[in-house]
Length: 169
Image (cartoon, rainbow, N blue to C red; front, side):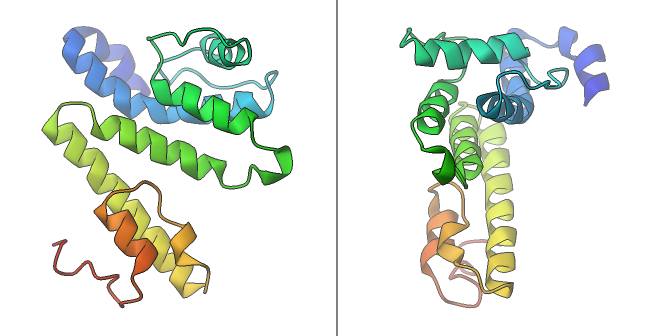
């Protein structure tokens, strides 16, 4: 991943860079979460799209009620607001919300292939998480991330295949 970013990324068109940036946002998500927990934390921004200082700007601009900077995905601000307005002892599970916002953002990219790829990843991860929750007798309804058809079926179905056999290959 690091080699691709160093060697190939500069050769991409502006439109292709925007699509590739979607894949690197997962590293920015983790860094944003880390900095929300501790603004003095050291993060590895080498794989993400944004430096630690840029991510701190997101947090500061939210706290100061400044207008969001368009260079950042809007969900960064949405998540910062959610995180900072949630009492510390109730923040468990917010990382899943961040993942859901990320997938939702990526699936709206306008490129069918990339959008479908992100949705497939979301579905596979949700199915695996739901199967693990069922195996360990956890509340499956709380496990899926996002709000697509597969996530809703996983939350509501008690069928062995979560009612997905007719909808998924």
